[in-house]
Amino acid sequence: MNKILVANRGEIALRVMRSAREMGIKTVAVYSEADRKALHVQYADEAICIGPAPSSQSYLLGDKIIEESVRLHADGIHPGYGFLSENAAFARKVEQAGITFIGPSPESMEQMGSKLAAKETAKNHHVPLVPGTAEPITDILEAKRIGSEIGFPLLIKASAGGGGKGMRIVKEEKDFEEYVNSAMSEAQAAFGDGSVFLEKYIASPRHIEIQVLGDKHGNVVYLFERECSIQRRHQKLIEEAPSSILTESLRQKMGESAVSLAKACGYYNAGTVEFLVDDDLNYYFLEMNTRLQVEHPVTELITGLDLVKEQIKIARGEKLSFRQEDLQIGGHAIELRVCAEDPMNNFLPDTGILNTYKRPQGTGVRVDDAFEQGMEISIYYDPLLAKLIAYGKDRNEAIGRLIRAIDEYQITGVQTTLGFGRWVLQHPNFVSRSYDTGFIQKYFLPEPVSMLKEDAAEKEIAALIGASFFYENSTAENSTNSKSVTSQSHSNWRQIRFW
Ligand code: ADP
Ligand code: ADP
Ligand code: MG
Image (cartoon, rainbow, N blue to C red):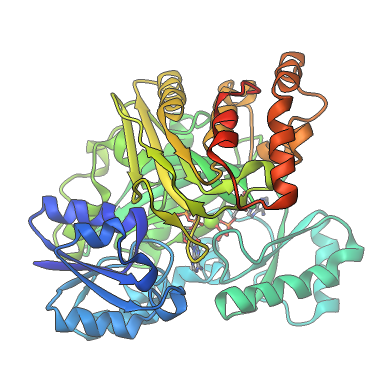
């Protein structure tokens, strides 16, 4: 492979190009009119504008991207995550054009892309499942009957879902019909497929996923787990590896389940098998993501592997250069997704100019980003600004490093999840490892004045009172224009010690 076109933008485009460059492979960037000055465009050996800002007119134009790849003699396409990464039709067309798709086969993507089809495969391979319906809902009365059997609360889920979209928790039977209809229309709008199904709602689970890597010769290994239980809107905000609750034997069992599932669909390249784990350490298959995952750096840090390089080598047809028994976990890594969002306002995405942007540095700190001071965060794309990752010999060292790095990070002009991340990392339940996917809902209230629930520790409440000046500022701004966040208010946010 001599030249790779990266069909993506932002931090992941840059991250892929860096590995390609280390391997002596040339890179091509694609960009929208809004991304003319973006760092991935500056970094690439060649760059091509593919259309206006909306991704439907640029980053999602598969045919155009393939045409440009052919014209520029790119012999590989890396899709990153999001956009076209899980689009089997795109992967197929790439291969038909004589270009290598750096990812799994279109057939594996089809088999695992639909949550329902994936669950069917999992069931056939004795991988434990969250109980639920095996077919999409067609008859609402019949579904309601099955719903009552499963019991409330239950979850309505989009088969084509992703990024937490198309999901509804139904607490009472009376809301059932309305929620099925709204989940269907959300799924239709987001994924072009309105199929939804029912799942038992697992109370207070942990989200633990297994990274797998397979080559084109039938070898598949697991690169251990990532714990991603700190979530808002069913989307991850903090991820770590290894999980602080898995035993050696459970790790092996879950790893082997993930490998058997990958083998069941002839999987090659990088993929992730997601599970929920309940209080009794039972695990249930959720879905498989047939691509590189946002949070892959924590796995890289504890295994010493470069997952993008492995993806490229696999795509070139090379055999994995290690076996399962060669792999081991070293140290601990934690990632915070630094998003342009306002945690005080329900994590609403924020936009604006990065008036100040200074990255942290130092031992054990990795920043995967694609921004510089003065750049604009627009409404068009994902609010992810950066992934801030800390590595240490153990969990405590990783936590301490991540907090130190958060304190060094200076961002003004948009609200971010930095201060929120610091609050989580110091929270007694996070530190003591006793939490689940309900953490944010349980301990963090979006309303500025009562951010912590009433039952919070007394010292936290005392700190809150000391910080009340900030809330007044913030509330006043929110009521006029939530977009115009001044650097002053942001630095207050950074200085207050309510965490
Ligand atoms: P991960 O499991 O890698 O953490 P997320 O669910 O957070 O993935 O999604 C990763 C990225 O992909 C996000 O930018 C999200 O908006 C996007 N994404 C996820 N699923 C889809 C989908 N089905 N279609 C388009 N974009 C998606
Ligand atoms: P997506 O494709 O949007 O990533 P997932 O099926 O992976 O959808 O679910 C996303 C998150 O939603 C999970 O990490 C978990 O927090 C929550 N979730 C999903 N299914 C269940 C369930 N059956 N019970 C409880 N929580 C669930
Ligand atoms: Mg998921």
